[in-house]
Each structure stands twice: as structure tokens, then as C-alpha cells.
Length: 201
Image (cartoon, rainbow, N blue to C red):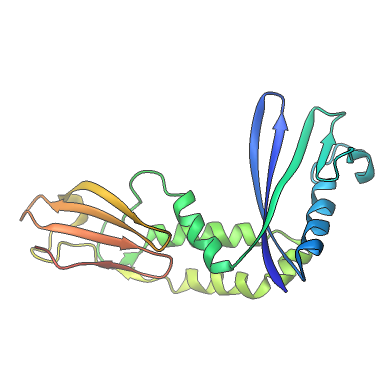
């Protein structure tokens, strides 16, 4: 059994919406069949699923053509690669940081919750991903804690100034700060598995 990501586009009047779904299949041909069966009944407008077909086997119409959906691509992936991509996809500006030491990492929790909800889609896919869903739920219970005080003077995260961030490919994100109390440069690394704070300089 292999994991595939399905990319699709919904056309609704003058607006477009991207769709991304995960599915498990024996091979790429079976993946296309599962995706087509899914999107054929993706929008319930009261018609039979077969009535949503068009001349293009990868495009479907709903509400007499008012809504169209096209499957753009299906690519093989891994759960780890997909999770890493979600971190970059859903990171907008400054990532959230805990307000005091020894609290759960909110960024990690948000990512895990998003991945868990995305995988828990119901039906056959949900059963196939039962092990991954359980793993993510367990991760939420044991998420790591973060000591986000300044390593040099112990000042809290509210006594620092954000200076920039670096994306390390899809492996991690480095957030850079300067401690307002002692002037130390602080770097925090966010990954799917851990968070660390380096020694102040």
C-alpha cells in the first residue's frame, strides 16, 4: 500500500479553490480510480454521482455546471514528507511561541492537530490511516515542553525582539531574536519533532 496526495481545483464562479487530499492505494492507477470516485460525489447537489461526469474523466460538474472541480495531479508521497510540507504551507509570519517556560509548544500542537484532522477523513482512507491518526493523537498528549527563556540572563520570551527567520529547506524553521535585557542573540528551531534554544552569545 502506498500513500498519494491528490491536488485538485474547484471553480466556483470567478473564484478558485485548491483541494489537497491524501489516499492510500496499491498503485497509481488505483489512486486515480479512488480520487475520481471520491470527487464524483464530492458535492451533494441532489443528483446521482454519474450525472456529475463530463467529457473529461478528471473533471466534474455540480449544480448544472455552476461548480466545477478538476483533478490536477496525483503524486506518491510519504507521511513524513507531507507533514513537513504542511509546516511550511501553514506558517504565516512569526510562529506562535509559548508565553512562559515549561508550557507545551503551541506551534507543534497546532501542526499535529491539523495533520490529525486532515487524515481523519472517514471511510476507507480513515481506516487505512488509523495507525497514523493514533500516533498523532498520542503525540498531542506527550508534546514536548519548551524553556523559552534567554539562556544567558533568564529573561522571558516577552523581553525579546524578533529579527528574522530562515527556512532550512523542509527540515526546520529558525526564528531569530535579540534579548532586550542582555543583548544576546537567540535562535529557536521549530521542527515537527522538537524545539530547541541555542546558547546565547
